[in-house]
Length: 296
Image 1 (tube, rainbow, N blue to C red):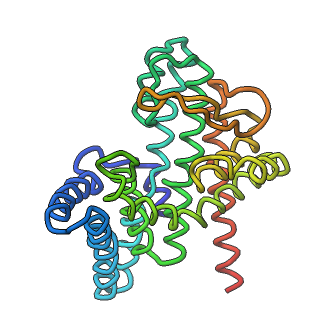
Image 2 (image 1 turned 60 degrees about the vertical axis):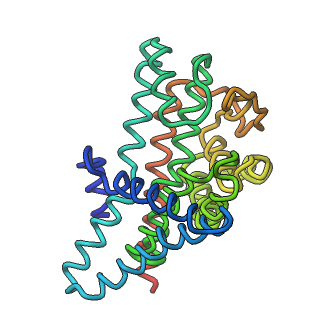
């Protein structure tokens, strides 16, 4: 609760964020791993262990040396840096506001900052849908998953998840450069997100229209190319009563994506509705944590 409150009040660190520094370190380790190992897959696997497992173990050891009150403060600080709820809200509203004002060009440029698809020729509905999809998917990656791993394994668990998720964002591509080197990062991100994603989909259902979310999750979730984003976005779209997915351009190539959810296409107002759904879902998750703590 304190970490979430700190995120609400302070948001992301504007300069010198630890993940920015970490990205520079990861790039340096990548270069050394590519040079020292016979195959990219071996280098990528070893680099992942160095950059994810080692920091988590070092944090675990460090916490064991601290007195209880200082360890608690460290837990709060680590979790604060691992969650990104306010940042997600700020990015989403930066898209919604120009959409509502009729400035489609600015809305497209703001969306391009948080998605990998081509936004140049998107219409208003497509921009709104892209923003809602980002809120729902990143609600799992940037909020629910770090909280889940914090509950499971404390600050080292949350840190390991956030570092693994960062490496997937850097290396988890299916292009020539990272198809083999980034295989471990992509696989481990899928593994670490499997349970949090399904919990997030469940929380979305409880926080919105439950039966519609459940039905969309069960019938559409497995159709998406990502095993974790599919259930999350299908449940979220169903909970909101809107339609997401459909064709999108990535790297100049048109991809036919399945339709998720049911109802009318997403509109600008649905971006705020998605943020409200995420906040309610986090609240539902915290209630489960508190209930579990009381029962245990």
